[in-house]
Length: 488
Image (cartoon, rainbow, N blue to C red):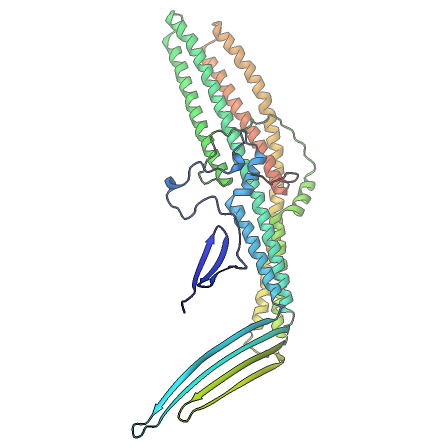
């Protein structure tokens, strides 16, 4: 008889066991196969040049202007760190279900079969004997733990809160991911604005360079003024190159958080301009503190871990109690023996059943139980102080973010007013210079002050947006009212 062939296929999260033989093929779907979308990055590859280029998901095909909310949606969908946290939650859920399984009886089935042959003969005579024996035995046994000092119950509760703690950790990962995406997004807007400012400065210098060149050709101004404008134009060009570099770095950071393996975004993607609004609509800091203490997932995680530690401590009391187990065994066996010279045949069938209740009580094990209890009590104390430290960290985050937001709002308003003043001042100085009523150095100074004021304003506006993001992240309200689902 030909041996059956066993083939195992695993293709994109689908597991199949195919058993083929001469009679045909039977396809069995294996229970327990974990299905999940593959990571965007081919982690087994080590050569970037062999990576598939321009590998962008379908969600960016029709996007021209990428908004912050949409970038956060894609990050939630693609970010490997957040996906890892999601699967960690599923693993914790399965550990919880495993703990519940301890309430069920355990059933085992067994089979044993075989045979032997014994050929015996004597040289002095023709006596010969051939014994053939065959046997088979099938059985089934079951055990059911009836009582173990509530150790199972405490373990179930401990695993349940461990599962909740893992869910809180996933939520905290999302909280930090939303903040990271927003920071990278606003860095891009800052770089874009700095490019605009540098370009505007360069156009100003080139415009004055053309006018000054004409005056120099007519002998009205010295060569030094022409050279000064050329130097300032080069300085503006360097600023623009620096801003372009900062833009690319910020785009790479955003692409990584959004989970794209190229570390880049499609060239067609554009970004909105940053708003010049400087509102400071804040309520009392106590409201933000209360909100954070109720919403922060990292604090919730440590609270759940404290409950896990407590139930683990209660579980350690279980070994001091007796254990009671019900058991049952049923088996059937058959044996057949055939003997030649003289020919005879014998055999038997045996059916057996055994069942009952068994109780055990551990009286002494070298203080292992005692020391286990002391260990779990120490872990509970540790968990309590972890909660206290997390509480203080939340308070610190909220207070720091609140004060930072207030300060950034004041700065942005001042820089906004300052920009209006220096713009008017530069225009007046430029008119005076063209009329010959002021020196070139005064014009350069006014233009430098204007460029600095523009840069300070956009930096203040970006810092204000980041401060607002930080305050929302500190209170975990950065995704409230935002639908983070995304369709391809």
